[in-house]
Length: 148
Image 1 (tube, one colour):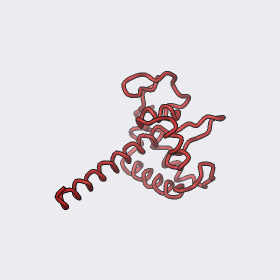
Image 2 (tube, helix red, strand yellow):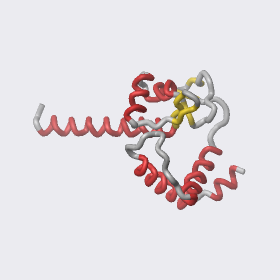
Image 3 (tube, helix red, strand yellow):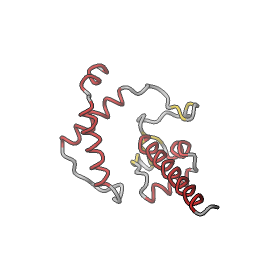
Image 4 (cartoon, helix red, strand yellow):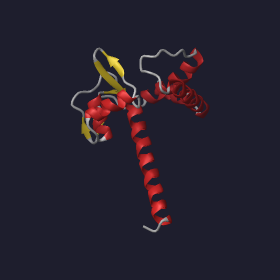
């Protein structure tokens, strides 16, 4: 079955899905997590095709965080708790909850618990490290310009 999915997925499918995801992110920017957005079936199919192909290639079993197996596997392999997100982002759980309150991370409520997308947390971490590197580069440029 994985071979069929791999064969059916090509660069055009991935590019289409990326374009659709970017458009959806733009529509979701600044909205509350419980806001409803209509998505046409073609967009959803494009995104789900790539998600299915990628998820079928993920390892089954426990979730590995930082080289150690997590205490409890999550119900959905792609969803993690705020505590696991805090471990990935190397910050406290209250800091993750502040990111959620600010709308920088978007949880899904499962009963009274928040579940976050692992991909979103990793993307946030990459974006933050990129911004840190850019700020450091700007600081180096300023120190060279003003001869500090």
